[in-house]
Amino acid sequence: MKIMPNRLDRGFSKYQKEFEDKALDVLRSGWYVLGSEVSSFEEEFAEYTGAKYCVGLASGLDALWIAFRLLGIGKGDEVIVQGNTYIASVMGITINGATPVFVEPDEHFGIDVNKIEELITDKTKAVLVVHLYGMASRMDKVVEICHKHKLKLVEDCAQSHGACFKGQMTGTFGDIGCFSFYPSKNLGAFGDGGAIVTNDENLARECRIFRNYGSEKRYYNKVVGANSRLDEIQAGLLRIRLKHIKDLTNERVCIAERYTRQIKNELVKLPSLVDGATCVWHQYVVRCEDRDRLVEYLNAKEIGTIIHYPIPPHLAEAYKYLGHGEGFLPITERLAKTVLSIPMFNGMTSEEQSYVIDAINSFK
Image 1: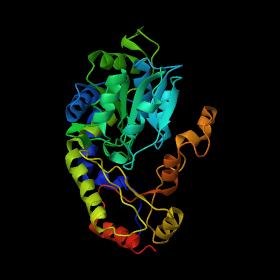
Image 2: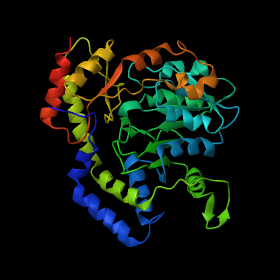
Image 3: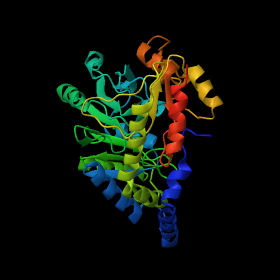
Image 4: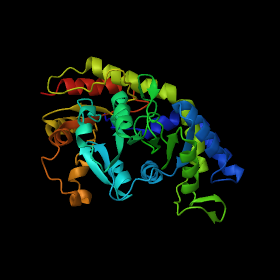
C-alpha cells in the first residue's frame, strides 16, 4: 500500500460538484476581482472565527507582513517570535525592517510563555504567536504579557483554522490574526490566498485600502500599498470548504485520536496539547531520536512523511546576517532534528490509517 503524506485530491472529490458549480458561477458572472464572493467570504469567515472583521489577501505571507506594516512596526523595532516556525512567520517581520527576537518553544511546539518576558527590551514592539501544526498556544499568559508591557499581539494562524484556547478561536486574541489558505491548509483554496481578522474597524479599513494599491477609491491612492487581493474564484471555493469545515475538522480529529490511542512505540514520542487548548491537526507530528532511520523505514513501506521543518529560521542562509549560529536555540534545533509529520489528510481511509499505525509500531 502506498500512502502519501497528504492527498489534496480526496478533499476535492468529496465535494466535487459543489466546487465545480461554484467555479462555473464565478466564471459566468463576469466579475473576477473584489466582488460578492470575496465580501461574502470575509463576512462568513469573520463570523466563523468570532472576529468582527476579515480582509481577504493574496497569501498568508502577505497577511503577516501587511499586519506588521499596518501596526507601524519597522526598522529599529523588535518582535518576539518562537524559533521553531516556518520561515514565512519571520519574513513577515523582516520584510518591514524589524528584527526577530527568537524564543524557544514549549513541549507542545508552541511559544514558551515563560521565556517571553526575559527577552523584552525597550525596542520590543510586538509578540508573534504561531499556532504550529494546528495546535492552539497558551494565549492567556501571552495576552497578559502583552497588556502588561503594552505590546502588539499578532497571531500566525496559517495552520490553526478553527483551533481554540479556552473556547476562543485562534486569531482573535490579539490585534491581528493572520491566515493562509494555501491548498494544503485545513481551510485550503485551489491556489494561493490569505486573510487577516481583527476586531479593530480602523485596521480592517486600512488593510482593505492597502491591499488594493493603497486605494480606497479607484485612482485615488491614499498610501503606497500592495496588490494583494483574494480573487473571486478562490473566495467562492473557500466558501464551499468553509461550509463543511466542521466535518472536515472532525475527520482529522478522529484520525489524530486513533493515532494517539494506537501508536505504541517507545522510540516514537506522540504530540500533546496545552491544557485548555484544542488542535485541528494540520499535521500530526511525532518525535524520534533516530528520525532518519524511521524515515528510511517508512519509505521502504511506501509511507510518505514530511519534516516540518529541517532548518530553523535562525540558521537559514537568508538570516545569516542576524548572527545566530548552531547552539543558539538548542530546543528548537533539537526539534528540527527529531520531528516528523506522518500522513494526515481528509479522506484518509481506515485501512490506510491501520497501515501507518502498524508500520510505526513495528519500527525497532
